[in-house]
Image (cartoon, rainbow, N blue to C red; front, side):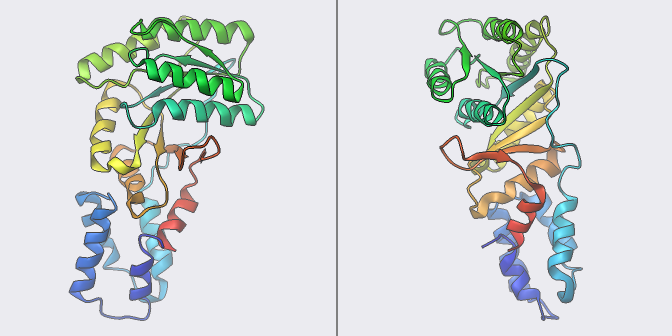
Length: 278
């Protein structure tokens, strides 16, 4: 059942929405990770909705809070370089592999660079994925320089004329200055070979407002072009997608809904809105 389906069923054919109903809706919206600001805004707009066109009106309200920026891939002239950033634990490294698998299944050649060198498990995880899906993985020493691995990945992609290079980055979040320095260094050395076309930020949908705060720090450190939203499993907390796009005006481009490589797809804004309503 969608987040707003109960609200729609109540409002249809009803002229007076009881105060208790509004309170219940407010609580549901907050629990869904819409956030207090967007919840207040939505309630103000929803109070103007007439019962005879509730679903259409709510669809318009929800759609108006989504980013209008392009959700398509930003492609390079030769090799398209995608840098994937995010806090450890969000599913960042798994998302790199799933994105690579998706692209490969669509006929693209891909190289992955295991730039999260401070976590041996992340490097091993990407190497395992690479073997499973048939994608080259460039890696370096544990605790080595992430920028060096990214550069080697760029040279490998150039050598084999790969369609895509996807770079996993370190997910440590000590402070904004360190983060900015590290990501800028990776960007600087890779751009000796290719320009960075996309920076995708991975956010765990289940972390709600904490995920939003992390996102703000990353967007201040690097020019994020899109979001990969993980663990969006259709639960009531799926309202976080609206909150992210409203707050940051960055389009969600990909979603992860499970553990397997097939549980990864393009974010469909209209399908998402419909899912909240029905």
